[in-house]
Structures are given as structure tokens and as C-alpha cells.
Image 1: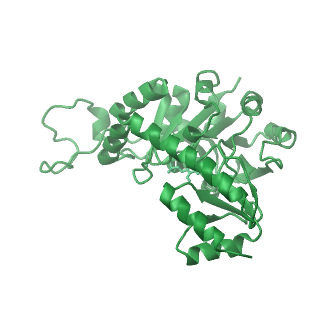
Image 2: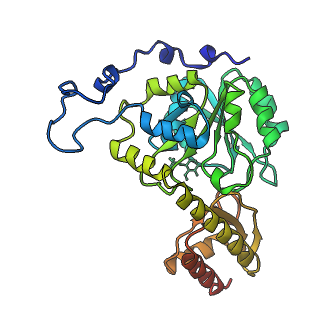
Image 3: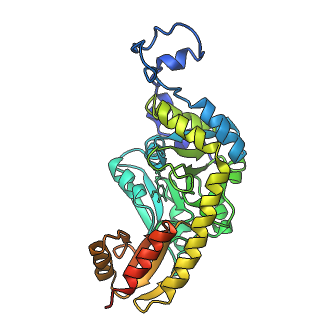
Length: 343
Ligand SMILES: Cc1ncc(COP(=O)(O)O)c(C=O)c1O
């Protein structure tokens, strides 16, 4: 059994969080003379610090209780908060499966936390034999699993992930930023089964609100309370809460966009795989494709010269490019440009 009180930093357990005006009085009506706001205008009031209306809507869409939801200023804020809740700077460690999303490492460095990097297998799966011996390290507090993974685009094997959650006595964070593009099941249901699990999703990808900055964490209520304790009081603006709420009322529109993107992903994968400059197109559960090419640097620069910007990932996976699926017309331009490049 995981003992949360042993995992959370002592100063965080002892911390008395800032109590803001909207914390103390939760009513919606009245004469508000409590928060030193300007009484004029329509954006003059501080937002709900706990985003209750938005969480009610998310709870219905995701089928999870409101008390198991935390919202951050993007998933990136949640990643940082995980380090601050669980890892003592200069002492504790986190484990990642590489190559993966860069913010786990950056956030770790910001918090002075050492990262244990376990390379994924040749098929970009978790190497349990290499990972498991590290779980006994008493300073290892967090394991990050990105599924579907950025930049490799594949999902991790479900039983491997569940095995880690049961064996590791720290907290497992599963980043599901790209889950809506995958046919594989989400790990969100496991939140009700395992108290040491945090599943993250975001409004930035399939929901199409990257500029709005709303990330979601699903976990047991005790972990949610610790995240709430450390977050800045008004971490999600009223405008952003409204935009996210509106989006949840347009589920059909978002589902049809996801279908269109997935269809384009399959079309572009086939076209790419036929090109002489492309050596391998990896299967994708995300809204991007990872492709191994003859010379990633050359092709990347040649595309930039044609005003087409993709991601050169050769430093992470040799000679690999990461291509986001755009609109059909944009993807057609990419294919035309690639055909005009010879090595
Ligand atoms: C795996 C992964 N997680 C999280 C994020 C960031 O999400 P957010 O916009 O919610 O901060 C990204 C962005 O590219 C990502 O690739």
C-alpha cells in the first residue's frame, strides 16, 4: 500500500495555504467588498479559484467525480506542481522513459530533481527489466509515462503500465495529452483503483484550445488537495474557464475534427511511406507522425525554406522528423514540398 504522507514533502504537509477572498466566501451574489477589486467593468472580478462550473462539466464528460479533478494552467503547470508536491529539491528523483516529452526533464531541473532516464525499447515500449530495479530507490518519488508518447506517437502497453502502478511505491503520472487520437483505452478508470496514480489530459490538443491553457489532472482526492494547496490561487482566468466550458458544449464539433485528423494521419502516413527520402513511418496514436528519413537536418531546413515548419527530432531519435497533422490543404502542401526535395 502506498503511504501518501510519506511521499508528500514535509513542508507541503505542514503548509498553510494562502486563503484568498473567493476561498472564504463562496456565494455568487452579494455586495462584494472583499477582494480589493474595481467595482466597474465586466472582467473586474477574480475568477472561481476551484473552477467549479468547469469541473462539473468535465466530470460529466469524463465520468469521474469532481473531487478527483484538478485544473492547471496547461498540463505543464500540473507537471511542475507534481515535482513541488512530492520531490525534495536536491534529494528526490523522478523517472522517465526516453525519448519523451521534454517538460518532465525541464521541470525536474527547475525543481533541482534528478531524472533517471530509461530508454524505450526498439519498438518504443517500456523496458520493464531495466525500469523495475530502479523502483526500490527510496528517493524515487515520481514515474512519468507519456501515452501516447511524444515524440514516438505510440501508446504504451496497458499491462506494463498497470504493472508499474502496482509495483512502484511512489506516484505514477500518466500523460494522456494525445489520448483522443488513440483507439487504445485511457488509463483514467484506474484512478478509482490506485491511490498513487495521476492521469493528465489537456484542452490543448484534440479539444483545440492550446491558447487557452487548461490542463486536467485526475487522481485520488488526497492528491488533488495537495495540488490545490500549492497552486497559485487564481491559476485559471475567468475567460479561460469560460472558453473551456463552451468547448465542452461542442462535443460533436470536436469529435468530427478528431475523425478528420485521424483520417488525414492515415492518408499522410501512406504517402510518406512511399517517398524515397523516407525510411520508416512509425504507427501513430496521436495527431502527429514520427518518420525516419535519410537526412533529417537537410529535409527540415529544406522545408523551412519552403515555409513549412515541422519538428526536427533527430537529437531524440536519429534522423527522425515529427510532423503534426494539419488541415488537408496544409498536408497536401507538405507532401508536394517533400516530393520536391531530393537528397
Ligand atoms: C505529452 C505532452 N504533454 C503535455 C503537453 C503540454 O500540454 P499543455 O498545453 O496542456 O500544457 C504537451 C505539448 O506538446 C505534450 O506533448
